[in-house]
Amino acid sequence: AQSVTQLGSHVSVSEGALVLLRCNYSSSVPPYLFWYVQYPNQGLQLLLKYTSAATLVKGINGFEAEFKKSETSFHLTKPSAHMSDAAEYFCAVRRGGGTSYGKLTFGQGTILTVHP
Amino acid sequence: KAGVTQTPRYLIKTRGQQVTLSCSPISGHRSVSWYQQTPGQGLQFLFEYFSETQRNKGNFPGRFSGRQFSNSRSEMNVSTLELGDSALYLCASSSQGTPSPTGELFFGEGSRLTVL
Image (cartoon, rainbow over all chains, first blue to last red):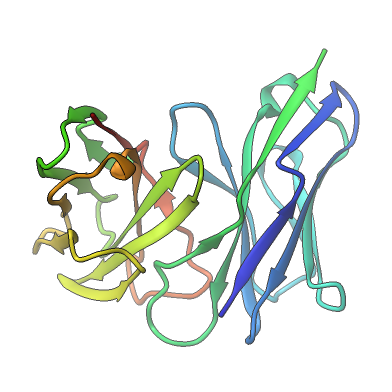
């Protein structure tokens, strides 16, 4: 079975500072990994996804993530935080193989606060 | 292109009642998945439908059920509501063609259910 652990339920940064949100996964097969963002009273929006094509993945809004198999990690980073980045971020894993791809296993989420 | 539409957005029910939530996927998408989001348990997979067939089911009691219609619209039903069923229920759609493990899930804004 696959699982996801997000280290830190709350992260606070100053505007312009580096954003680092941590995600570690556990999967018995090569995983497909995703980062989603959720703004208050909204659904989830995909930031980026790892599909084994490249270990460094670039997403929307200046975010990127690096897949490190040896560390079973998929941390999300952004060089310079913006006030509009304040939201909750979810790391998710999808098991490879099979035919059912609607099931993602999500981490508990990290709330990002950006201070002026 | 219209996104995933969920209705109603907000609803209040009392214990013992039942509720039906509706989801209209993105035009052309054939796969619909449902998730329950609560502060304590986070995002949990309920079930997935593809071409009117349930492909996968999460670890929820039989009070939770769903179906998909020939136009890909989906409904989920919760019978004999309990206080713990209060949650944001999210619907996601994907797969214009053959489902892919790298495919993105597109989420609606959710239906927020409060059980009193």
